[in-house]
Length: 230
Ligand SMILES: *Cc1c(COP(=O)(O)O)cnc(C)c1O
Image (cartoon, rainbow, N blue to C red):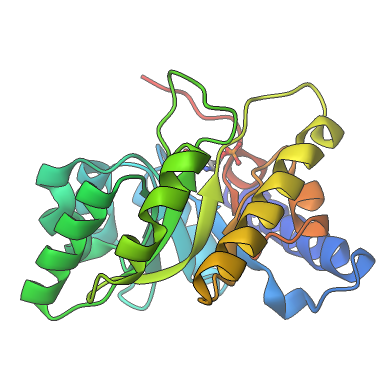
């Protein structure tokens, strides 16, 4: 099992690098976030032992159990929905949050971070297809709020994150990734700020996401295998 995980990791790292090169990008401009949700600490340790330091979890509570069992030099990113009442706990373990999706949540996060003397990196999650059952800003509301978000003192807005509707092929995902990049450019034009980060692409479509500008891809099952949700 351990051997399989480390060989999968090597394959994925290589595919990330090749996708960047194909797109004429510096491979160092694309980060691999290894999504360790549902996997116990001993499996995650295999990836950490291979020298990988960036991990994504989708639940604060799961991270609370896992993070203390792993080396302290790891970076943990929260990629799942964040409830206001979990912000304080989240900031204990995560230095980056990919799922900020309202001004209210961002304000609260900034407020708590200031109390703690921290300044987490945040991505603004966008619900590109305006799906009812998904979290994330719809584009019109993000445009309405962006200047207020930028004014928050204790969060550092690095960019946008999305989980587009599932599709049968990675090629069908491309228009969503293009839309993200264009939205980012538009927000930069409107505000004069820079949003270098695009958190997009998962196991089945990260190469297409990289071709369209992803700076961080979130890959779980292609490294650990298929998850069994309880
Ligand atoms: C689980 C998850 C991933 C990873 O998905 P895989 O298909 O296993 O690579 C990426 N992003 C988010 C937000 C997730 O919840």
